[in-house]
Structure formats: C-alpha cells, structure tokens
Amino acid sequence: MASLEALLAAFPSPELDELVATRRDLHRHPELAFEERRTAGIAAGRLRSYGLAPREGVGKTGVTADAGGAGPRLMLRADMDALPLTEATGAPYASEAPGRMHACGHDGHVAIALAVARRLTATPPPAPLRFLFQPAEEGRGGAQACAADGVLDGVGAAFGLHLWTPLPAGRIGINRGPLMAAVDQFEITVEGRGGHGAAPHETEDSILASARIVDALQSVVAREISPLEPAVVTVGSIHGGTAFNIIPGSVRMEGTARSFTEAVGRALPEKIRRIVEGTASACGVRATLRYERVNGATINDAKMADLVIETASRVLGEENVETDTRTLGGEDMSVFLERVPGCFFFVGCGLEGPPRAHHSPRFDVDERALAVGTLVMEAVVREAARRLA
Image (cartoon, rainbow, N blue to C red; front, side):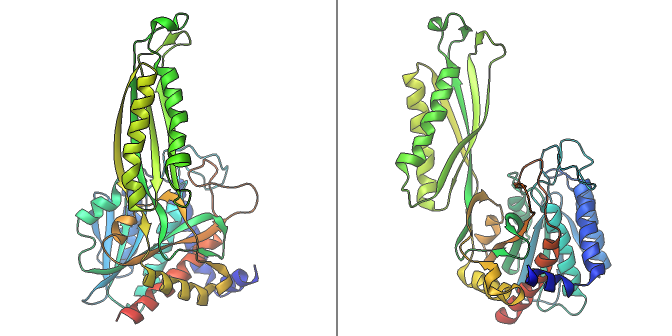
C-alpha cells in the first residue's frame, strides 16, 4: 500500500522503534484483569516523564493523568489487560507468562496512547485532556470501576481505538452508530437423577437434556429475532460427568448473547429462559438460568464519528476509511460512550497469511499499525479540540 509506506516514511524512525519496543515489552509480560500493576507502573512512569502527575490505583489498577487547563476534557482511553491463554505464535517477543497472553491488542493500545500523550504534551496541549489507562476490559468491569472512581468527572468527550486484524494496516473501520454489541452472559444448570450409563431408563439424563438445550437455543436467533436485527446466542462452555459409564446428576453450561438494540437485548433473556426451562421439562429434568448484562452496546455519537471519519480521511485517504464496520464482539468502552459523546474506532493491523483471530493463541499484529493509530488519534484529538473549543 503506497499510502501506508508514504505515511511511515514521514513517521520518525526513533519514535516507531519506541512504539514497537513498548508494545513488545508489554507483550512479553501480560497481566490479567485487575492485575496490571507492572503495566500501570510503566504507563505512570512515562506520563511523569512527560511532565504530568498521574493518579494511580484508579478503578483498582488503572492510571489517569490530566493535561492542559480548565474546562471540559477530552478523554483518551486505552485498555491494558491480557487474556488467560497460552501463546502459540513462536514470536521472539512471545509471552513469558504461561497461561497469559495479549491476544487482543491491548499491549498495542497502551503503546499508542503513550505515544499520543507524549506528542500532545510536547507543546501546550490543544485542549484540556485526560489520559486513561484502564484495567479489566475483558468482561471484568474495568470501565465500570473507573467510572465509579470519577474518571468521567469534567469530561466532555471520549475517544478510543482498537487494533483490528480483519482490516490490513493503513485502514480504519468505524460506524456512525453501533460499532460493537451489547454483551450478556448466562449460566444454565441442568439437574436430574444420575445413574449407570448402561441403564439410562433408570435416570433423568442431564447430558441428553443439555445437548437438546444447546440445539434448541439456536432457534432464538433463527426463528424469534428479526433477520434484520443482528444477534448471537452461543454456548461456549459445558461441564458435566466424571466417567464414561456414569450419567451425571448435573451439567453446567455457560454462554453469551449479543445484540445491538435495546429491544432485542430486552427480549433475549425471556426467550432463552423459556427454551431452557421448556426443553428441560420435556426431557424430564430441571434447569435454572442465571442471566446478566456485562455491558451495553458501544454506540458512537454520530457527530463525533463524522469528526473521526473526516480526520482519518485526511490522514490516510478517504479510500482507507471504512464507515460501515460493525461486529458482535463487545467492548466496555460502551460504559463511557453511554455517558458522554465520543467515538471508538478500529485500526487495521491484519498480517498476511492465515488469520490471526482476536482471542486466539496465534494472535499477532502488523506493528506498522502502531504508527497509524498514533497519527490518527493525535489528529482526532487536535481536530476535536478545534471544533469543541
């Protein structure tokens, strides 16, 4: 891509080297949700070196720092946590912590946010700013914890980005409305009278009932949600039984439901409950459902999205800005965008060759995307400062 090469040619080599070095250091030392003490310490130390006074322990292990004068602040958010995976990339900078891996790009988000902070504070900031390095994005309530700790106090708008392997480096993905889905989590417990596998007629088979529940749940989206309304119901975990010849007395399943609109989100729990309890009853067993909302849909403010689209188009070229990107993946950036106007967008980082899917042990990124994310986010903040002054 000639435009990407031209962009990189104008990006200072020492700065790109530091971006990559920061990302790789964090990648080698991943930390799970609410355990990001080393990562937070690096962020705080860098912010101090830029002349800022970071506040640590925000939302338990997060870091914030303000720059500029008084007035509504523009908040830039980067998440820091890794995932409970064992890395299988074979990269020289692979995780040194078994069972932990940056498999979603948060290491890159921290590196980009630090580079943007340094650029924006090298001269008088263009507007009052707040930098947030957030813990526990991966379904553990980090954004909620930070919001409860006052990170939105005095904030007028919020921006964030996410490295995104479905797009190549040099491209941006965005939406003027819902970008990412609401995330719901459910747990199903199926209970029956266990017994010998050779005498199923003497039991209430929780395994068979669970299999039928999993199958029946697929009819929720296929037959009870409008095909014009994207939704997902997935069972991702099943645990039951201790031996090949024993029908267990109980099975526990966990899963997720995803949706974009409030109407679908409200409808899903009762539809799932009806199918779970009805199918269990038909199988002669009992089932209970525990259902909870993890976070809402990540919905961009249309004016803020236009600001990002126009700015990214100037930086990357209009042809490299996709404006209809959506995914049923979830993000707790939604917590902030529910309370203040703002925009969240994807920065392409896909490598050539086999897919490196998010949350995969083989996840990795095209590190050129770190420079792209830095340039676009810096330009977005400067443009927002100009428009919102």
